[in-house]
Length: 211
Image (cartoon, rainbow, N blue to C red; front, side, top):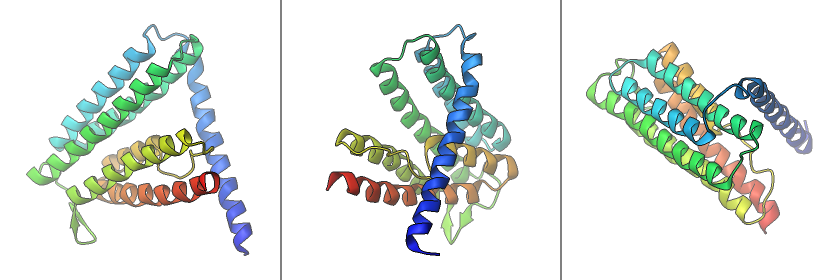
């Protein structure tokens, strides 16, 4: 298989994956029509649920923590859907959502770190010779830079910066699956790795537009 063909297949995979995410977001629209809350209220509720998820992880209740992570993701989808349905999309709303997402990411990983250090998370807390808290920090750094690379590159004029498999929704789904199955450490290792792979992908992609 030629290098050009490999690139084409990868790009087609990204397009299909993004179309799937768009379909999921579109399926939320009918529900959003009946939600009586404002988008910003939904954003704050999603953040509050993330805090609950962190508390569950800190105390070793992984399945409940995973449920809360998924529930916070539902609210994260709903706030944007409600804004579109009610024609109330604002720049501040997008900014607030982004800020709350960053805080939520930090708090959830902090809960896992606390649980791993105190022993509340009673699973294998080491991978590749490194403790779980190390992988949490690496995953959190990667999560932040994934977001930063997109916003920075788009501000400079790059387009289609939503490439890679480590956007927030994918990271939260992986975290939940790990919590449900008892493979939380493996899930976080995967998150740590794919976030930094995504960063490299976005740097290379941005280079085409910014050089």
